[in-house]
Every structure is written in structure tokens, then in C-alpha cells.
Length: 331
Image 1 (tube, rainbow, N blue to C red):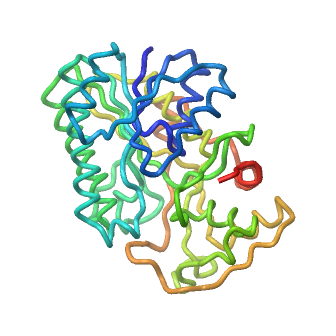
Image 2: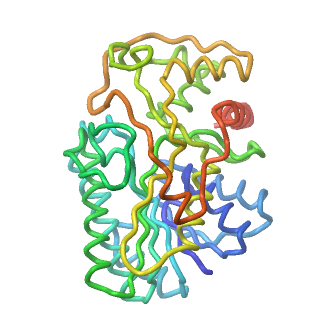
């Protein structure tokens, strides 16, 4: 299939482009490079041996995005493009609502106009709010604790309604948990612009000496050691989940969790990283971060049953691959 990937120069997007090409699909990438680097696609080429057509386009700008649809005949698309930092969304809610919702609506509109009926959407476990763990797809969505989560929940509803209105429109909504790790080559991984918002790149940059110490946001949660518990999933497993969703799409809207089903605390992750890589990661405990919840992990049996997908890589591989990429990265 010929697949459009929005946000394809980003962390999860670039790994998914690799997985798509390895499965025999051809790919076109659209990205505004607001939180990614074009060099990631050069690395994808080194891994796959394939040139990746690229358009420097903001998905919220319909007139520019339409030119991409006019230039290609797509069989499907995967939508990653969007703002994604929980804390920042609390500080800048309007930016998040505009960017994430408008991009989804523009893309869905053009997909239907140009007969692209396979649509895979990058959602998030944040849509569950502070629900009872483990989170399963049948839960009623509670009000989320941050605007980022609200934009994902609202985008899900937009796409589900679009699928109801258009019998040919097939949507797979992937609620994934906490991606970490990097490609085994060490050529692509998580390299955010500026100070990282996610845990693993913060850990790797502290280990490398780029940052002084890790900030652990709160140690008074009702968890095993007081720090937040998350379901960390290797980004390569996650990428393969997107390909599985694309390959198994049927008419209507379908929701899947992509996670390991196992929770790991912040301090447990730090300890695993130190042991796996034989390096110390100094840290300090600071106040809780607005919008965070205590515990979040998946019930992931639906994806196994319906997509034939399960997460295969463990926390040690996540830590080793993340560190390998960080050591190679020159940014």
C-alpha cells in the first residue's frame, strides 16, 4: 500500500516508517518539524535503503496539505502529527486544542474527499483519565486531567462520528501508553527539541552529562515507591502495532490499547537503566507535575486477539536501545 504518514519525522513516526517499509509498503511523510528533525528521515534511509518523499507542511493548513493528496494516490494514512506534552498542554491549552483538533479534522476531510478510507490515529492512554487500572478499551472515558488528553479524546469522537457517517471509512484508534527505546541500529530514537518532556530522553541526557540531574515529579503517589507508574512500551513494538492495525482495518471505528500490561515506576525505570548500562543517573524529587496521575497501564488482550499483535521487548531492551541511540546522537 501507499501510505501517508503525518509527523513521520518524529519519534514514533520515524520508527513506524521503518516498519511500514520493511512490510513492503511505500511511504510519504508530512511534518512541520516543530518537534522533530529532518535528519531522522536520512537515518530511516540508511536503515531501509529507501528514499522517503517528504513535505514540510503543517497539517492544520488545508490548502498546503491538499497539494500532497493531489500529488499522490494514497491507500491509507497514519496520523501522528500533533503537540504532545502533558505539562505544556496545561500551560498552553488553546495551542493544543487548535493544533490537535484542526489537524485531525483537516486530515479526515481530505482523506474522505480523495477516497483514502484507511485511517490510523495516534491516540493516547491519557484519554482514560484517572480510571481504575488496568485500562481496557470498554471503559467509559472520564474527564481527562489535562488538555492534551482532551484533544485526543475529542479527536477519537470526531473520527468515530466520521466513520458512522461514511460506511466506507475505516478508522483504527490506537491508545498507546509510554513509548521508550530506539531502533536497534542506534540511528533513530527520541531526540526532542529543547529540554525533554518525557522520562527516558531526560534519563539518557542526564547519563550523557547533557543535563545535571533527573527531576522526578512527586514521590507521594499511592504506588510501590511513591513515584508515578506507567506502562513503558518499546517504540519498535509500538511501530509494529501501527502496521498491524493498518493491515487489519475494516469498516467502522475500532479502538485498541497498545501496551505491555505491566506498570513500572519512575524509580524502577531509573534503576533498570543504571543496571542495564552500568551508569549512574543522579536525580532529585520535585513537586508533582500538573495533569499527571498516579498509575497507568494497559489491558492489551484485544490487540492480541484482533490484530495478532503483542509487545515483545522488555524494559532492559528499552533501556539499552535508548542509551545506544543517545550515545550516537550528535544533537
